[in-house]
Length: 342
Image (cartoon, rainbow, N blue to C red; front, side, top):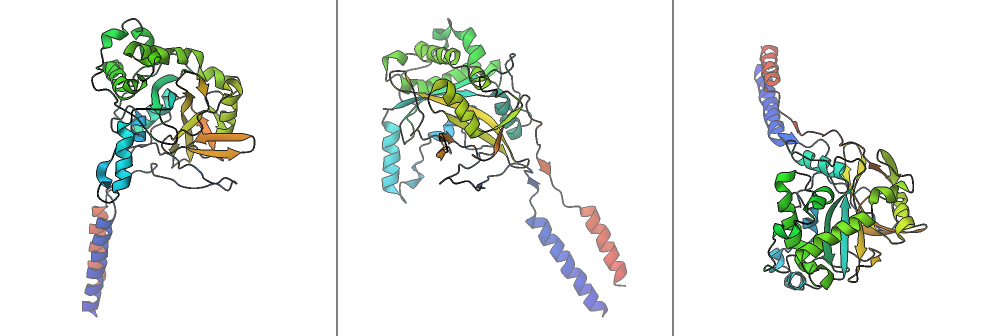
């Protein structure tokens, strides 16, 4: 009888050890992918983009995940790899995507990724900043890094640098300001050079400032009583923009899966090669999809039936939580079992 009890103790301890190894040492308590669909009559719902996004290769410009060239399929999918290769080296494009970001959501995103990350917010409230001007193809991706010989020269921006610091800032701080502008120019500006109006560094950044002054997103939303600290569906936000601009934008969210909150992140509007405002329909933008709804259609990665929060403050960071197996409790349990089997 005693040997059977000892055997049970050994089996129990083995189970404890297995449980210890199979449990992760650290988990994200609020960051995960979500493909949940709502019960609405649409053909396709966008995937909610989690706050922690490791697809970006530099942590500053999340459009990096939109234009990757991955040659890993050269063997398994030679035709697909060939198409991707041609796409990257074909520097032609159809549409310019002008992106404004809501700084509070951007800062929340970074702090979730790295709690020690500093973030410099604009001094003015309700102040959207420029993320970039991105040439792209209809129904496809790219191009990017089109002209390696067009080197970045920050001195060419002396006449507009103060305005760039205000309207096109690097939210990570002044020390990386020049780096951001260099990145945007080399990756996207060198492709925008295809047209005369944007064929040099000064023209490219000056055009961004001009569009920022003409299309002040906080005023566009304000016209439909959409203010920070409000919750609206993405269709309401889309209708507010269409009401003022007369063109369809692309609306992007970041999603907190623990609290089931979508945060308004970016609003993108599109222009043709004549710099005329056009619909963003047909532009492939990462995880965004085009969804028809009564009264129109919206291009978005936000879930169409969920409310989108337009934060007035940087949300409280949800820190990573460390999980440790309680070894002291195991020791106490072992002592009890040894006493019980005596």
